[in-house]
Length: 433
Image (cartoon, rainbow, N blue to C red):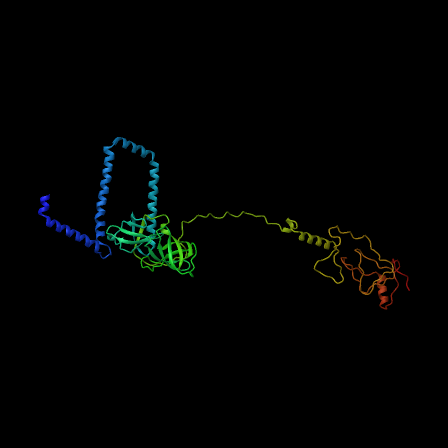
């Protein structure tokens, strides 16, 4: 070996220098996709080697476990374990298959409804770094992926392609501090810039203080960044506060609520869409129909017939009404010369009418057209008393009766007319003058 190096020392040194120069050139030179050649060569060369190493490691570990160390014991343990956990494994398998089918169905439905041309991809790795939020997907430049393409899901935006390698791509998530995208609010059409903070929440910046943004309002992509087409959901507003120069609006990304999605869509050719009037609908909730009404419902009786007076005022009104009805008074109708009801004995039973007529005291007379207050029953005039020309009936009395003959005669004498003889047997008639 030493003689070989001494013999070809110059050629060896030359080859080492050329190789070092190529390495330095690859570090400095970038291709048309703004990627350093050394990075492209390294990723392309290491990926197949890593696959071979992983396959050899798995096969060697299986060979060592099955045929070298306790072959029969290990097989027995695995058989017993399979029998004990068969149901659990079947449930887990079915759940995984159902989740994969649901994701594939959701992506298929989204692809059929969105006007943009998309490419389905699966997340195959997560980037390293304490503050770095990047993932790797299994689609690269061979499949038509380019740097700067948008990555979305039916729930919202996920990120954008940072680097596109031949067989894979590096995606910068929306939560990365280097991420930015133009957004617009759904209700008030407020425009801003979505920025990642390295946390599950994002920040919408550059919104003036006079703009109105409400809690629970949705933000959508505006298309101003020329990366994300207009109309894709971004997230919902969780808090709004005033910052030093602009409003600080905290938004929860809708596509990252359950962590990094396993299946994504890369938008190859974006088409702008209209922002919907309503926020994205969640899973529908079943609401049963109301119960049917009964066949026949008894009619409710009027309050006056089913229940007594509700207040003291109602009780007092009923008492006043009963007293007026007992005295044959009609409330709301005023008659000339009629006396009001007598409420002095309110709350007592009304006294009955006398059986016969009540005669006034001797010598009493009526003056002018004023009628004396009559008792409840009919009243006979006293002897020698002059009756008024237009006698008024007592209040509450029945229909008007014709005046007696002696009263008519005295009225005619007062008017200057002659009267005839009084019929015999008239009780209480004075002798003729």
